[in-house]
Image (cartoon, rainbow, N blue to C red; front, side):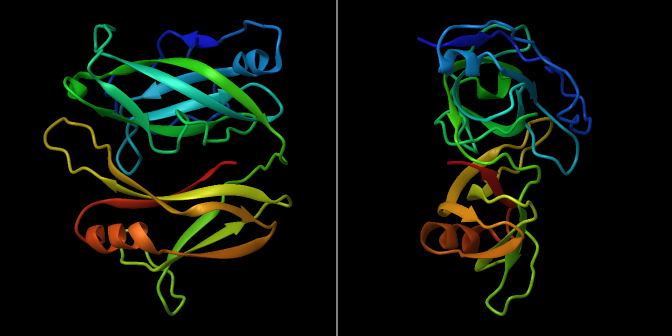
Length: 245
């Protein structure tokens, strides 16, 4: 049974606005306190969904607010809603960074994931409800920066995300180590007022531990290399790192 249910995130309209800062209060504030570490951790989470976020930003963005002081790894479940806030039972909701699998680590303040809608009626999805099944406290240092992600070629030259790169440089500018996962995302090319969403998400390597104040070079091999070679210069793509465990 889910620990906590957040009925409706706030943003439901296709307004082309830039993403809000994580410091801005938004969405439903959940203040329930329960006995048990996981239940208390779950009560520290709030959510806001933005179907669109403006040109140059990822669509279908879920902001996860963490009102605690520790790193949390939630496992979430989603129910898609249409514009009238009716459930869409045939629509499956998955994620790019793995908050539906317990893979994404959310620092104090908050983090983001990207939702993917599939199945009959997916184009009608305008909002979601979020159920927190578990929320694990992660015993790791709290970091205050995101890793710097730079695609590279064989000669060590920096490339852009839509180039055919063979390695990725990750820099940790924090004074503490951080653990991340890296994914290559191939995006759809929507027509009309359809939203762009992830069509293919391919892991690059496994869990990567980044030492403080250092660069780490991650080779792109296997399925990830095949995906890069197939998409580069042909369709929109991104290479992203997210906190994990």
